Length: 403
Length: 187
Image (cartoon, rainbow over all chains, first blue to last red):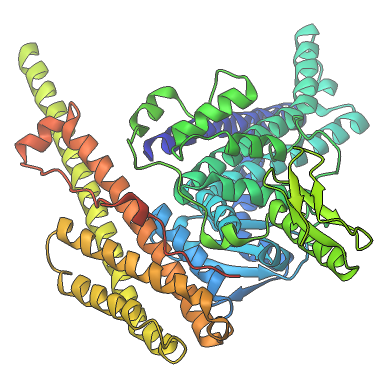
């Protein structure tokens, strides 16, 4: 059943490799224009990328956690959160317990970081802890755990660094090109040179945009997959769905987020209310669509998610190749579970109505009205001025005795 | 000469296939055993928590002697079967889950108990341990399924048959209603 995750990873790796190719092309064009030597450009591109990548690789999580002002907690600081993380660690088969951080922020969000599953961390905001019940928190932690387990953090870091490098290089190159007129042109060259120049400029302008599109595509694919994995771990997609609903309804934006850390979060911290986020430049899929898919699941397996995903998006392509999902048929073992007792006792709208009725009953009694219950379900209020013995129910016409 | 090379090539490919498949099977079996050990850890944790729980609730629940005794008895039975076979054990553990859920259900009638910090902490631990038992079982069963798929499906089944690989045994939940965690209520 975990085979399809690697199959899906394969797709993301192909996209990432495409981005790498773009980076090399940029380097090549750079060297060709400015140094008359494509190799130098390639070297520059790789060196810039290498430095950024090393920085991200070794300092990434501490920078991220530092930026967001997270504080590390142990079992005794918040036993419930610790237990839930441990539950998801067991369900996902992760070998080592991730570090847990709390960000003191009323916004509702969470993220996972760490370049490999043995050095991972999950961080949640204090707002999230306060607002979600156990099942919902479990769904969110399951989503983060899936990012760790599927190695999304590493993949997205590689992608982000590559995107950054491409943007930086292209930016400098176009600046230099426009202000100096380019190095290559001065050394002559006929119409062939001009075509190459045109292609080069085209590439420099297009590459950052293309890289960004690839980046967002990969990022959103990983989000859907993390949702699917969370449902698989918890066997309860409703938990995550209802958590997403609460998060979507919360008006508070995360203070400490910035563009660089955005793809790490459960939901996009920069969402604008009322905007259809289903465009190419969003790291996260639209939240309503994620909820709809989760709620449409008939079981908890990845195949069930895939089916719901196809139906919701009206697309043939699912989250994983069909061949990989064929292995995922496990009769009975991926059935959905019941909500936990805590969620059951949470106040549901019907209970609120019931309580409101009880209050109004009390008010009537205080003003000396008498209440007569008719077998048809109607409740009759009899005013204290009424002196008769019987009343007639206005709904079914039965004659009832007034006590 | 060419024929010889072809034969050597085919043998080499078969050998590599054999090694890779065999190692894959061993990896899956280790994962399965590891998952089994994880269930054990959680079940032991539950054995440890129960005496504490009984100790805490005893002062409050004067009239629930039978319910408490049932839990203690189920716990002791489950613990004594801990080294027994999978089927007998899962049955005993399910019985324990059932007895525990009954005990935690009657907590509803004791508001004082529900205000006791010590009890609340224990209740969280028990709920979580129940969940962890469920999740480790789930992961164990997933591991068994993955291994059994490999053992039964072509072509890895050839290697499995040659090395006498056995199918893994699922940790069954006998009664469907006992599948759920004990009904711990938080109101």
